[in-house]
Image (cartoon, rainbow, N blue to C red; front, top):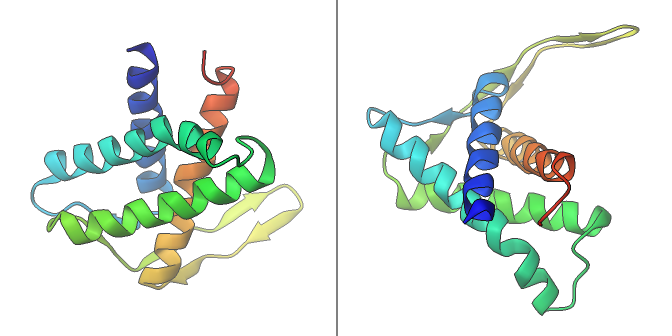
Length: 137
């Protein structure tokens, strides 16, 4: 039960932060229900990803796991646009980011690039939070 709640909280945090920085999601007029359905889908994906990868004898750590996490998140977000009528991926503009010594200029993203960047953000944030909490216990 704790693992399910933790997975839901991590999915909520990752979708919220992704929406705040990338702003690539449009939840429509039914914001709360669409948002919660997307969070539940991401949480279920993250709950069952490691057991499924272990079942097919794929490593559940490392770069391959990160790539699989990104691809599965991409697939789940795309499927949510199909099954939830109010949820859409939209064109967006990434803000300018200034890190001491580096400046990343603002970029306008198409729907496809917005989906890719959002998937990278969601999967990276969830994986970071799982790593921060010490993995599955």
